[in-house]
Length: 160
Length: 421
Image (cartoon, rainbow over the protein chains, first blue to last red):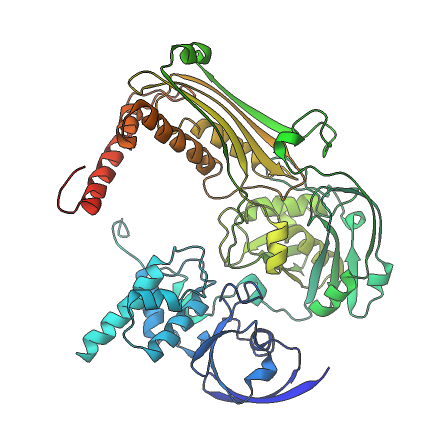
C-alpha cells in the first residue's frame, strides 16, 4: 500500500503522520487518533454524522481521504469544549433539549459552528439550509434550530 | 416530588454534546477481533452446503462459524422463535445470515467472507402477501404462509349495510418503511470469568439476555447484556441483531469481538414497518352517523414473525378509529413473504389503520354533504361509548374537546381576522 506523509493541525495541535493512500479521514480520526466523537452513520456522505470542519468548511469525513488533508486545519467535536467550558452551541443544545440519542449531535453542532463562524447573524432559513446535510431521526429538528437561534440571540444581546 | 413540574438537564447530554459518549462502535478492547456476517443475496433457497475452509485459512482469520457451531436452539424471535441465528437449511429473505467470520481486522474478515462458498437450490419466491396467503402459493413455511389471524365481531354488519344510506368502500395500501436510526447496529462482546458480556445498541436487553442464553446453552446468570448508548431505534432495535452472534464468537474464541453493521447491512437486515393492504367498507345513515364497518387487513410480515402478531392485534382494534361504530366485522391477517422482516415501528400498526379510517371519514363526509369536522364530531367516542371490542369507556375520552380546540386554533391561523367560511 502506498503511503502518504501528511501534516495538518487537528483541534489546535500539529500532527505529522504517514497514512495509507486509501485510508478515509473518518477512519484516521476514529481508529488511529481515537476521536470517536466523529460518528460513522452511512459511509456515503448522506447522513452528516461524520462532519468535521476543514479550513472553516464542513466536510463529510467519510468522503475525504486522509491523504487529502495535508496542510489543512481540522476541527472535530473534541476541539470545541470540555466539561468545564462548554461551547455556547453545546450549552444551547443541552438547554433547548436538542439532544436525544446523541448520534447526530457532534456533526450537527459542527455544522452550526461553521455557519456562525461565517455569518454570526443568519436567519432561520439559512440555519436550516446549513444543517440540511445533517440527518436527525429523533428530534424533528425544531429544537436543534431553536438552539442555534438561541445562541445567535444571546450573542446579539451581548454585542448590543 | 421535588422533580415534578421542573425541567432538568438530561444526564447524558453533556457527554453527547462533547462527543465523549461511547457508542458500541466506539469501544476498543485489548486483543479485540472484528466480525463480519455473510448474508444471503437471494430471497428463497435451500442451503445445500457451506464451505468455509478456504475462509478459515485466510490470513488474519481466527474463526468461521456456521449453524453447526451454535450450541443450542439456533432460533430467536420475540413472539415466535422462527428466525435462525445462522441459517441451517432454508433461506427466507435477502440478508439472511449464513456464516460469521471473526478476524484480527475488519479488512481480513471482509475479504474472507468472499472466500466462503455456498451451494444453494433456488426456490421461487413470493413478495405479495395477497398471493402468499393463497393455498396454492409458494410455501415459505410447511404449514402455509398465514402466520396468524385476528377477528373482531360486533353486532350485525349485514343488517347495518342493508339499512345504510351511504356506503364508502376502498382499498388502502401502505408502504414498507425503514427506521433509519443514525447509528447502525453494533456491539462488542467478551468473556469475563464464567460470564459472557455483550455491550450492544439495543432496546431490549432482557430479551437479548434470554436469547443469548438459550442459543449458547448457558444459564441466564452467565449472560450479561449492557445496553450501550443507543443511537436511535424507534422499534427497530427490539429484535436480535448482533447479540447472539457476538456472544457466540466471544465465547468460542475467548477474545473480545466487535461487530458493526454498515448502513447497507443495517437496511438489509433490520425489520421494517409492516406494509398493509386494507379493504375497508363503511356504512352510514342519512345523517352521516356510522352504522357499521367491514374490513380486512393483510399485513406483510416478511420472512419472520418478529412483532407481527401483536401488530395486527393493534391494527385491528384501532381500525374503527376514535369513532363509535355499533356493528363491526374486522379480519386481520399477518402473512409471511420473502420480503424483509417487518417488526416494531412507532405506532405498531395503528398508523396504517389511521391512514385508512380517516380517509374513509373524509370521503363519507363528502358523500353526506357534511364538513370533515362535523362528521368527526358526530361520530367521535364520548364518555360511556362502547368500542369495537366492547370496552366501555367510562371516563377520560377527550377526542371531541381535542377536535374543538384544534378547530378553533386552525380558524385563527387560517382566518386571522376572525372570518369563518
